[in-house]
Amino acid sequence: MRKISSYRHPITWVVGDAPSSSVSWLYLFLLFTVLFPLWEVFVRFEVADFSLFSLPSHIATTLWQLVTSGELVEHGIASAKRVLPGLLIGTAVGFPLGIGLALFPHLASVSEKVMALLYATSKLSVFYVFIIWMGIYEAPKLGITIWITVLFQTTLSFFRCRALLYGRENIDKGMHEMILMAINMGVSRWQLYRDILVPLLLPQLFFGLFLSSSISWSLLALTEQTGTMRGFGFLIQEGHEMVEIELIFAATILLACCNLLSWGVIRLIEKQVLHWRQ
Image (tube, rainbow, N blue to C red; front, side, top):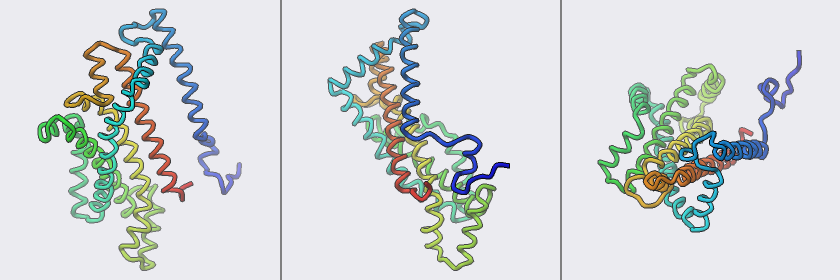
């Protein structure tokens, strides 16, 4: 039987080491260098309908026009202002709220059921309710991002904190025993929260940010179609009204790139904050 080295994670013997960040970007680049030429060929030889898929070269031309005219920066800043503040506010509210609810048994029993109901609620339906409450302009667009982030952060931190405190899942047994050991050694409640619970829950904070960022950027394609003249969602609406399929594809690609950029920033911050996990 092969001996597993003490300095290498056991799972890497089965699935191999994870590729570095530069290699991952190389794989992504190779994927698109194959995908877009095939797309171009299929449309030009009428394998795919031009009116439905356009040409990647035309989409690239549209993107370049947005760059040279300055509209890319203008629309990008408008969209970022509707997402980034919501992520920060939602995390600042949702993360401690989830921990706080988990620490009180009576609140936790009720909160678990309330969060299950809210989690299943359509995010788009909530946005329309926000429009009725706040009007059609900026407030509901920021409000839906805050709502999504608070919901994810509260839910993730709540259930993770409950699992750590009560050892409900096998994967948390070791951490649960560590908490019990700390309590037996006489640590104060404040030390338990500050030095053990919060560090163990920080990965859930960043995971919640990943989920909230993805859904918030994707929802902009709908939320920016009402009450605004700026943003990538507005470009999608404009492309739909003018039957400019290239503009719709270009704006969709830009939204995806914004989410990818957000992921990169969140991952960078996560590595700095959770350096002890490396």
